Length: 329
Ligand SMILES: [Zn+2]
Ligand SMILES: [Zn+2]
Image: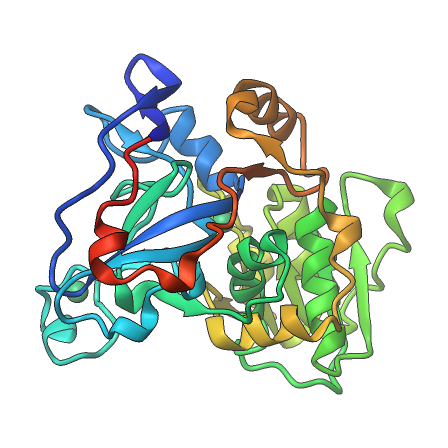
């Protein structure tokens, strides 16, 4: 199969063996579409992921289950799925009691990801989606689930909220909040004076960080009322300086938001409430990867996608045996 692999030599599109041996709780997913995210760029640049050895990139996926391990229910074969990229370790005390893993790995960073024709995954990581949902929408469930974490960060719809940051990620945060009934949301990009009115100091109940720098964090602290809430959302790779002399006297709450519910994200995307199309670029073939990575390095423009596979025609007729002999590409 084709796979976009990062190794110490750089990123290349290579042919590797299709994963064949599935553990009892695993599935094989044929990838239809995949979104490119900042995390992939960090792995591609060698800033995240294995120091040595190789890793297949990609964690924002739309695909179809084409094979299953012995313990996975047969009904899952042929299901259209998105993926929660937090991969359970399977051995920690939380995993052995069926609770969410205490130290999950991340797809495309710690284990091989989905910029490939097929990806092997624990069945527990799958998010089932309606068959009619566009593949780009399915691949976009992961960013929406990440954004939904904001709503679970102890804020209320009647509160005044500030979304700080630029581009698509800040726009998605504002859209998700509005879809959840937050009507008093103001967006502001400190690096672009034309982005909107400068927030009035001390007037916001909460503010959301979307990959801001030191100046952005200062703007957040300044805009919040005493005991307001700073919601840290980005997975910025560089450490961020915070002026404690500004933060502490206001007794601000610092809350980190990672992921909300994936099934809620799937319903939200399927409902059509969010106008997502303006945030998306046209999908490109995996072969265009260098141009696509280059484009993403130029800034937070529209979301970039790779078209990877076509929907298998007679999928529902595939039994586990037929699926196991899926052609090696
Ligand atoms: Zn992502
Ligand atoms: Zn675990």
